Amino acid sequence: NELCHAFRKLLDNPFPICERTQGTGVWRLLMVRMSKATQEMLVVVQVLRPADEAALSSLKSQLVASLVGQDPSRRPLLYDDIPVTSLFLQYRSAVSDATDSPTDQMERLYGKDHILMGLLGLRFRVAPLAFFQTNTVSCELLYQRAIDWLCLSDDKPTILLDVCCGTGTIGLCAAKQHPSVRVVGIESNEEAVQNAIQNAQANGISNARFVAGKAEDVIGQVIEQMGGDAVEGMDVCAVVDPPRAGLHSTVLNALKGCQRVRRLVYVSCNPESLNSNVIELCSPSTSAGKGEEGSLWVPTKACAVDMFPHTMHVEAVVAFERLADMTTKTGTTHEN
Image (cartoon, rainbow, N blue to C red):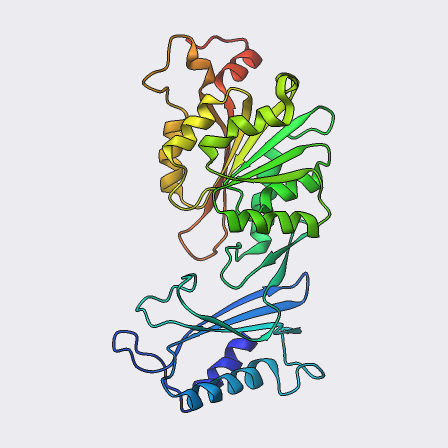
């Protein structure tokens, strides 16, 4: 709130608010990331770039002086007792207010090129446009529930596959809590994989590694490479945290077909795609033969996490087990 008040004062200067449909004005959007764990604040101000270079230079000076301070090295301005440690100016001419477009120029006006966000005792390097949950308090509840439902054990050889791992948040938190578990993150975005590797090194985690590739192509390969014949005696489970569109059918088929994976936890940010993915995970494929029903996934637990209070949006966690394992526990048959 304090930073917003300081920014509002800037709106009284000669630079007008942007009219997106008309392509006039300057000020467009303010984005703030704050880390109480590290006492850091990253600010991105999105503008329609002024044509006049002198005006642009004046705008930059005003931003630094108003939000960071006239002499930040000695007397930085504080907002909720936290200084602005990174200030960026983003130039955007498109109509939408999206901030994550790689084609929009981003200029660092002050400070570091990233912020360190705390999560379940770890610290993650977050760039201005990188995805990271905004509500870190609820995010810790979400991720801890997912880790708990994986039922990881340090008493027997265990492999955890973190599918769609992004920068490694869930997998690294699990690796930290269970040092004997071997974690493998799988992510198609190579830049995210590099960030995950850096996050592991920064947090001193040695029992996690990350692979760039499509999950459907590498899930089986990763398991074989980690244990070979010894995998037969290992406990193998997986966690998935896909984007809003959910998991592609090829990934779902890979998770259904890889029989060594016996437990699965699905973290979802979109109930609609979750619903369709659950149906597909729990349905036999058209090519399934008789006796293969036991390989199907069955949801055993589910909960919603209110990440965005006062909105309709919720995140969800769903735990699955193989039907064969459940019937073994209960002593029933698949037909029952």
